[in-house]
Image (tube, rainbow, N blue to C red; front, side):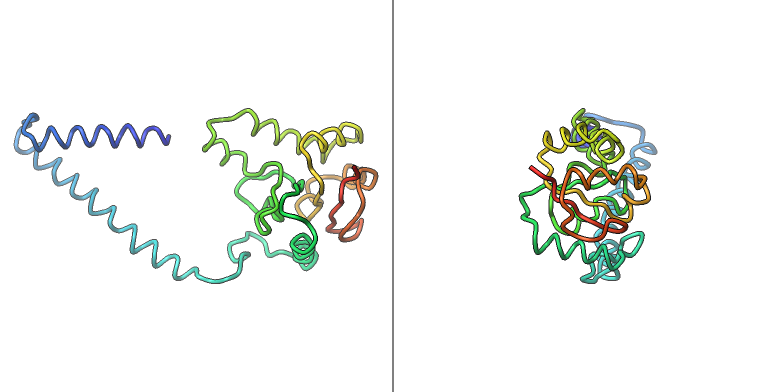
Length: 202
């Protein structure tokens, strides 16, 4: 739909030029009606700036979790602290995929890149790039498969050095599915029955 805005802008510019130049001579009542409508649309656009400013002022704060749908738990906050202090920003981490929610918890709050998140939003900007769907499917496979070799192969292919298992991952996958990471990596943060981070073995 982004291209539609470009086409609309071009059409409006062309129409306005011809209107003001006198090339288009509609009946007076149509001319006044369209002029009034155009003025109303332009004036309504000016409402956005003050309204948006006031909204941002009311929402101001330094907490990155203020708009989270659920408040992070103490183990999750500790995981963030561990990542910030111990993992280089150039290394990748695996997190489960979601849409418009608190998925991508570590990546969003640390800047550490994960493989993919918010695929629907990504598709809007990248015109349904097949890589988006492939990455989403690969993340699902890594977390859910019981085949350790398959999971290892995908982790290597995507150069993923760490795997995060947080509240979302624990709710989404079974303990059996998640247990394979004990064989694929070393537990560097947390407990095996809670929020944890594995460093993948070379």
